[in-house]
Image (tube, rainbow, N blue to C red; front, side):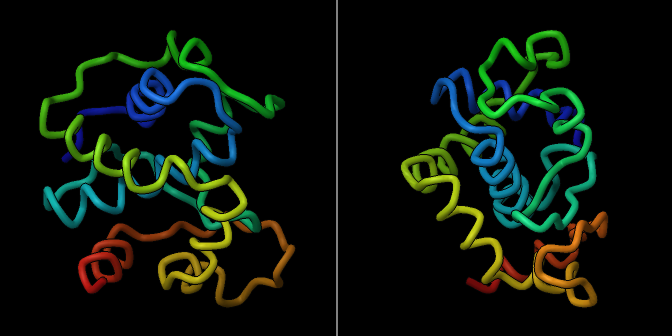
Length: 146
């Protein structure tokens, strides 16, 4: 199982891309987790990802930056252990390369078109708050098929 915290992943992304909206960070963290499941057959972190109205959110990460629109590497400095393996960095780097130029809204809209988020929100109204977890199994199954 993963030995990283979600703060490690967030800080690594922000160290590489600089300040960004919290919403965009959550989507990049989500895709990092998804592709780690496919490419490395294991999760990057153990924290649950919830299917919120604006897309996938990791509550433990949200609790660190709550109330901030934009986040920076310093936001997570006290929470991260900074011990990513080279393989974990490669996975996150590939996600950054593929997704980081997209807007937060584009990333959010994209997650809404994908089965893991759709399945987790299947019995919720569009703008209803939700805490349902997007399962690692649904993520692995969906992203390994595309």
